[in-house]
Image 1 (cartoon, rainbow, N blue to C red):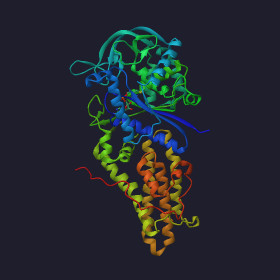
Image 2 (image 1 turned 45 degrees about the horizontal axis):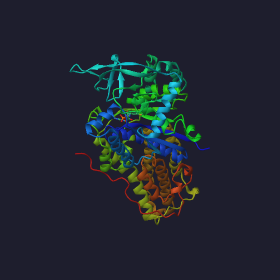
Image 3 (image 1 turned 30 degrees about the vertical axis):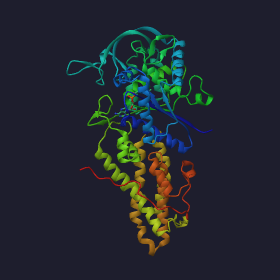
Image 4 (image 1 turned 60 degrees about the horizontal axis):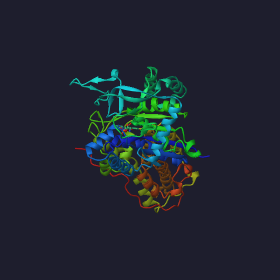
Length: 512
Ligand code: ME8
């Protein structure tokens, strides 16, 4: 039986176009999805857009458009982002689709049947920008004396009839769950944060609104629309056609991994598992909450207005450079500051001078000195330095796979670049260009070793930089059917003709 893996991004609000923060989460998922597919895993990679609620309704009104039309337009931008960054989702869910409304309604009914929903009145603060209720004790007061959410968002006073979910009932089951499954939330510091929050006592959660209509109606009472977070979280089940999914769809639950930003940890790690348990479903296996990209020290956000446009970045630097930079620059889980100069440094030192230069040196020598085909390399001629480098390359896949199971993208990339550095040292020590006349057989062994190391680098690199690592596979004349980890242990075949190499990553001008 093939392993399966269900992973998701958050579904993004359509109040404005995507920015680099959204690209980041989807990129992380895309690398995992691609890597797992190369391993032969049956992957379901889900992303989509969150289209209901007051925040979107307000943005549509400001744009002078009906909410559905506005959501259609902005959702398209998120779909364009997928093409632009070469993401490979298997499905794109929109919360305004009938399939989603059907599942969200069914989830509500399951909670109701369990006796976990009751009607009462809500009185308190609400932050539209964050689409969240804010407890009086969590409010902050700004320099003008205005009350604000902890994020700095405006709050408004809300008093209305509301349905509530008996979250308080799930406090102990949640704590038991996290004690039994400490890997269910990563990084570990986030697990502690969640456990502390649950231990501090869970209050029942208001889950419907009556003062606007842009949402999914509450099944038994259409004066109410569902709270946008109940609606949104249900997306992870709607993609499996809950509750009517096929046996194969049902078997995909629980999700293997929800990748999110730390801003929405509580919704995913407290509310969502409680809703699921109430509906008789197991909680997700793992939630990874990554850090924030900041720009000049401030969280990049549409509402703050300091966004970095991923479309423009890809246009300027190329898709693989951006993909590499985002996952290499900042340890996954930590915050990071976006800077053009750091990006340029990475492009020049790691891509142009690193993998780009190594490939070009090796493949140009093969073109010139070995008649443009994979050189001969009888294993009995391998010497210790060749064996050592090949052994390091052979281990690459296992090490990278291990890091990716922990979502440690930066360590995976760092490990690949250690092999590139080792190859650079090897080529400098062996000086194959000097061996042409003195020892052509040895030259061939050295160049063969290097070209097979390039094969390993290209294969593990495919998930991170699909465009240029695929080009490298082509420059090594690797059959398309060989570009996966089932073929990790095969080696390049001597005598295979290789095309003329081209530059993978051109150097860029350093900032003035
Ligand atoms: O919260 N740095 O949608 P959203 C890193 N619809 N990641 C960032 C980021 C930044 N500066 N800004 C945003 C929502 N993100 C809900 C989710 S899920 C059932 C519903 C990423 O459009 C990060 O993944 O506000 C964050 O959690 C998400 O975008 C928030 O996107």
